[in-house]
Length: 65
Image 1: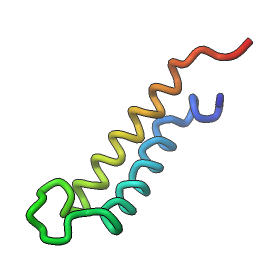
Image 2 (image 1 turned 120 degrees about the horizontal axis):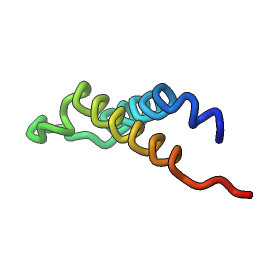
Image 3 (image 1 turned 180 degrees about the vertical axis):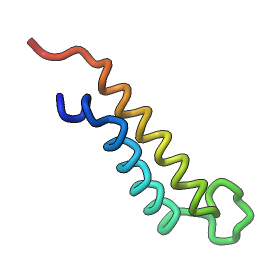
Image 4 (image 1 turned 120 degrees about the vertical axis):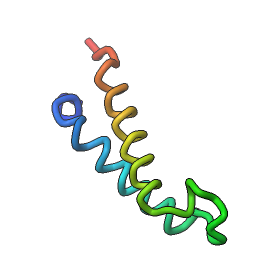
């Protein structure tokens, strides 16, 4: 857990980018009418932001004694 706290600026967004890519590839909008789901770059950006948010939230969790 300490490793994640130290490197959250890289781990969270990287995991989010990977998840955003797979979401775009397998779930995204095939017709192109969905502006957020049809663009690879938008999905990568949203995934990175969500990944960073989750990693930053982990930083604030209390540690077990």
